[in-house]
Amino acid sequence: MINGWINLNKPKGFSSAYCLNVIKSKFKKIKIGHAGTLDPLAEGVLPIALGEATKAVSLIHLQLKSYLFEIEWGSETDTLDLEGKVINTNDVCPDKKQIQNILKKFIGHQMQMPPKFSAVKINGKRSYELARNNLEFDMEERKVFIKNIRLLKHENNKSLFYIKCGTGTYIRSLARDIAKAFGGFTHITKLVRTRYGNFKIKNANTLEKLIEKEKSEDFLKYVLDIHSALIHIPSIKLNDQRINLIKNGMMVSLVNEFGKVSLDNIYTQALEKPLALGYLKSGFFYPRRVFN
Image (cartoon, rainbow, N blue to C red; front, top):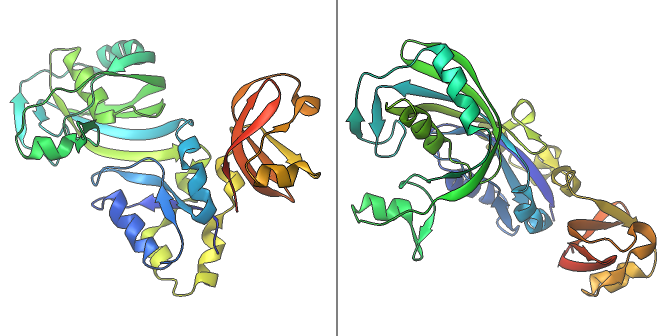
């Protein structure tokens, strides 16, 4: 069994699902998943969960992501990136100072309208499926968080940005809204996820490097332990009878260690390995997912 994470540098031009299936083909008996889908046009960090690590995928979404993205002024496509057809054009292209000033408006919590070509579900269907079939439907705004955004470069009708944001933030929508603030149009020409929580692009492995390894034992050196994705969550190591109780899905007292506090997320460890993910309520630990 292989349990842990692979820090994949997803190449441009391939879907996240395709990359997942390539790795899955090497380990057909191991459960596999990924955190944070990237569009085919996008590239960069894509955390891949193997085995028991798949139980922690939902907790990865609590962490911030960082991106580099480039936009081209003057035209908007139906997909808000290079893959779509042009639907709006004009000559609006603000200068560097104007862009820097408007970015302050996008810092913090705010409501954002997702792109119609996205994975958002509308009555059980992905919105991109409805959009591709030219079906009419309404999208709902969602609350997103942007910690920081900076203009890195602005020339030849193109602007390059760095952003650090929370889960659910659509960079394509942000590009659209930045242009809208000036009465203009843009679309994404480049999108690179440089960091997702503790996973960084400088440590990511290319798909080519991973698939050229024929034996699972060769593959192991690329696998990070389950802890590596959980550094943002409080944890505690146990070495008593509470371990067996948790293994059986039972709640245990951690009042002596934490007091009568409540926490939405915490994980327990035993023998230097993850034991269970769960939450604290008045000092009692309730397991949600128990690791095998």
